[in-house]
Every structure is written in structure tokens, then in C-alpha cells.
Image (cartoon, rainbow, N blue to C red):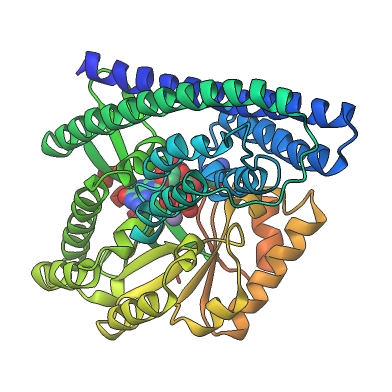
Length: 441
Ligand code: G
Ligand code: G
Ligand code: MN
């Protein structure tokens, strides 16, 4: 176990390192070209290579900050387009010099397969195919409108450099692929071990109304690794999402949550409790998602209204029709739906209005700043009135102080979750909390 866990970090570091090398090479090479075009006063060349330089540096900066998602979403496609433009306008083959920049597309096609691995097939397969097709056209033709103004001699030297870098990139990508696959493999082993050994535990964070009565809880998964202690969900959930393990993990969480609801239903003091469960995007997109949930509810014989699924706005980046169908099926079975972290992502009011939601959850980042930041305060007010207008429940998460609570109450949000009341608790402590907070409701 120890060796495996250490190697996750090792591969993660290696991946970041390789990506840093690649992005800095892109930046430096295009900066050299920017300077070159500057000296021969070819302003279009300066502009184009200048843009590539900035993109390279930005990609490097985001790699350093461990934000590889923005590279996949923005910088990779942009760099692809820029290199294609360079091929077409600045690297047009002549009788004396052949084209060279298109060779960058070979490592890029391979790299696309790595970064879009967890995405829809049209990206995962489509991007490598698209890049390869562009390579094919540029490699097999002399299409292009030459705006370069560079001399044949310069271009000959440049071709040697470009081809060398393209070859180096090819090996870099091969190393990146190797590290990435290895890391996934190890993590899959570790997490599936954790599932088998019951190292994943459910914690319950109370949700409380304005009278202090406990309405229910949000389930938050904790991973207690025997050697590394508490691995935070912010680390293992995104990693689990990279493999199918998220499906097993989520199923474990849902089954446990429904079993808990069944246990609560047997006792007068706890029979009213609701349970909110976080649903990850990949889990939601699984074709069997609805079917599985309904089966779990049926098996545990709980009242489906007591189960609430928390989805996030990032779901809306996917097929909306499919989402609507799934949400409608869940609603029909009586499951409640909550929109988590509201206001942090693809906020689009039309989604909120058109989906069968039961609850909006004000994100803790707004609650945190509600007293010190005017825009956090106004966003919070808008979200609260939106919920009122749609006649759905509103709850604030991350409530830590009486002053924040007071602000929320004054603006019409009467349900709270946060450290002011309690941190997420193991089941025994949560049950004790409920008994201690039974005041009128
Ligand atoms: O639990 P905090 O305690 O650190 O949780 C961090 C993040 O992990 C939250 O955004 C929460 O939504 C998410 N999270 C916690 N448990 C689960 C889970 O069981 N499934 C999913 N999909 N996300 C979870
Ligand atoms: O994304 P989601 O809303 O599911 O995240 C819930 C996360 O918020 C968990 O990590 C939980 O531990 C954390 N959390 C719960 N209450 C508070 C709080 O009062 N303050 C802060 N900073 N975090 C909180
Ligand atoms: Mn949540």
C-alpha cells in the first residue's frame, strides 16, 4: 500500500513536470519566432507567433497551478488552431524547403487522446482524428498562402529545429501517456481496496432550520487510509472520476445512505430526517444511473422523498435533453433534487427555471463573503429571491458565524448547513446531535 500510494504522487509530479517542459518549450520557441518576425518586420508573423507565445506561457502557468482542465478546454484547442494557421500561412512548402510545423500534430493527436480520455467520444476519438486529418492534408499537399517573407535559408534552419522539437514532443507525450495510465491503474487498485476494506465512511453534516431543528443531513464521504490518514474527498473524488471507480464509490454511498434512511424511519425522533447525497457528473451521465437509484430505493424500502440528490451546474455542460429525461424519471419516483454550489459554474437561469428542482444551495464561497463583499451579498440575495419565485427550498452551506446566519435570515433564507451548527459527523455523533436539537419546528 505504502509503495503504491507514494507512486501516485510520484506519477502526478512526473506528469506535471512533463507538461511544464512541453508548455515552456512551446512558449520559448514561439517567442524566438516572434523576435525573428519582429526583426524582418513581418507584423502578421509577430502577431501570430506572439499569440502562440502567450498561449504557451498561460498553459505553463495553469500547469504550475495544477489546473490542467483549462488546458484541455482552452489552450490545447487554441494552440492547435494557431499551429494550423502557421502551417497554412507561414510554413508553405516550396521547391527548396518542405513544410515542417505540421509534424507537431503527431504528438498533439496522441496527447489529445490522453487529455480527453474522460470526455465524450466526440472529443476523445474526434480530436485525435481531426488533428490527424489536418496532418494528413498538410503533409500530403503544398496548400497554403505564403505570407512568411522569411528567406529560404532561414526556413531551412527553422525546419531542422521544428522537426527536432516535434520528435522530442513525440517522446514527451509517450512518457506522459505512460505516467498517466500508470497513475490511473495504481489509484484504481488503491480505491477499490478502500471500498473492499470499508475504509470509505459516510459522515453526516446537519442541515438545520431557523428554529434550530435538524431537518436532515448532507452525506460527505471520508477516506481513512490506514497509513495516510484522512484523504480529503477533494482529492479522491476527482481521481475516482477519472476511472469507473466513481460508479462503484457512488453506489456504495447511495446504498449506505438509503440504508441509513431506512434505519431512521424506524424511530420517531429520526423518522423525519432527509438525506442529501452528492452526485458527480460522471455518475449522472452513466446510462444506468436512474435505474440503479430506483433499484436501491426499492431494495431499502425507504420513502423516496427523504432522499435528495445534489447535482452541480457542471452537469449542464452535457446533453441537456438527456439530463431532463433523467431528472424527470427521478422526480416521478419521488426523489428530491438539489442544485449544489449554485452560482459558481455555468449559471444559466433558464436551466434553473426549466428543470424540476426542489432546492437551491447557496455556495459557501458566497456565504463566506456575504458581510464583506458587496457582490457576494447581492448574488446571495438574488439566489434567495430566485428560489422564492420558483417556490423551491433554499439552503445556505458553509454558514460559520451568527452574523452570516443573521444576514441570511433577514434576506429570507431559513435553512442552514455549516460549522456554526456542526461539522460533518460520524453516524453516532450525528444521531446524538439530532436528539439534542429537537426543538420545535
Ligand atoms: O466533504 P468536504 O468535506 O471536504 O467535501 C468536498 C467535496 O467532495 C464536496 O464538493 C462534496 O460535494 C464532494 N463529495 C463528498 N462526498 C462525496 C460523494 O460521496 N460523492 C461525490 N460525488 N462527491 C462527494
Ligand atoms: O461542494 P459541497 O457543497 O458538496 O461541499 C461541502 C463541503 O463544504 C464539504 O467539504 C464540507 O466539509 C464543507 N463545509 C461544510 N460546512 C462548512 C463551513 O461551515 N465552512 C467551510 N469552509 N466549509 C464547510
Ligand atoms: Mn454538496
